[in-house]
Amino acid sequence: MFRPQLPDTPHMPTTLTTQHQVQAPMPSAGRPLTPYVGAVAAVIVVGIVLTALLAAVAVTAVSVAIAAVVLRSLVTNANRR
Image (cartoon, rainbow, N blue to C red; front, side, top):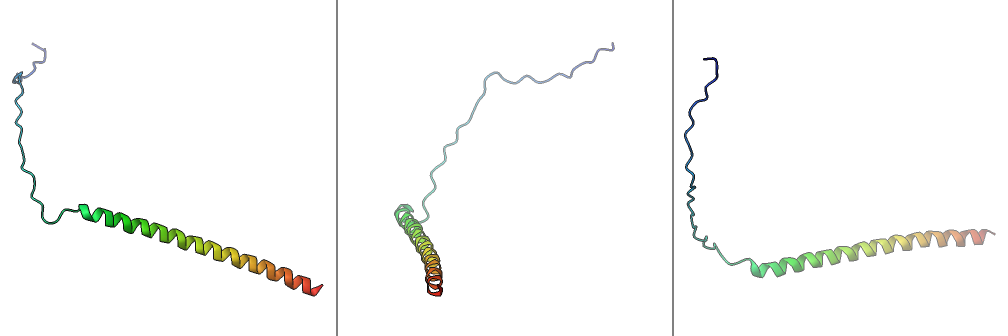
């Protein structure tokens, strides 16, 4: 009398049925992108190389400027003595 009663649940079938849908491939809208991959890679590599060269030139310029300041200081001090 005071026991809870669970509602009746419908039983699921033991065999599952799946439907496989095969989709047709999408037609290409234009030329394939394959020829552009090499060009894009070349542009990226050239950009990296040019950036590295620019950085090397900047570091060299700073080094030469520091060396010039040091040498100028040494020459100026040698002339005063």
